[in-house]
Length: 122
Image (cartoon, rainbow, N blue to C red; front, side):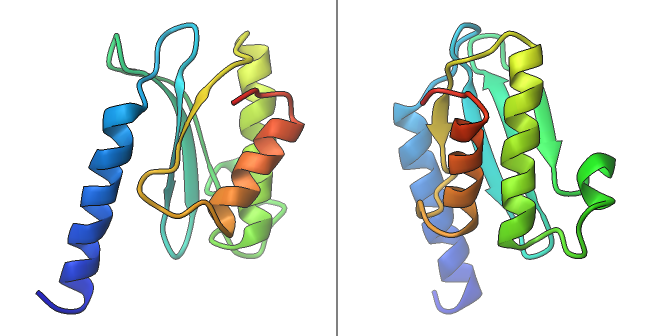
């Protein structure tokens, strides 16, 4: 196992390890973060009912119109802000954070901080 294949396996193992400990409920959904080179996505998930409550991506028209690129720090901050706004409208204030196997650094951290500034508690 070398190169990209090994990295994908390591990421999947970390994701599974984090997801074992973090579960979302209707009262306190899981804030799941997924990122790629070109975009970043965040969604609120109710694991009890196995459904997504709401989701926001850097490809969302509201965000896409303001940004040049969807996979940078600025995009992550915009996604965090919009997610917090939509969560407040849906009546959600508390969430559990699922970093998706990624380290709490860079874009993942920027999204989380902006979500906190927007009023989400985790």
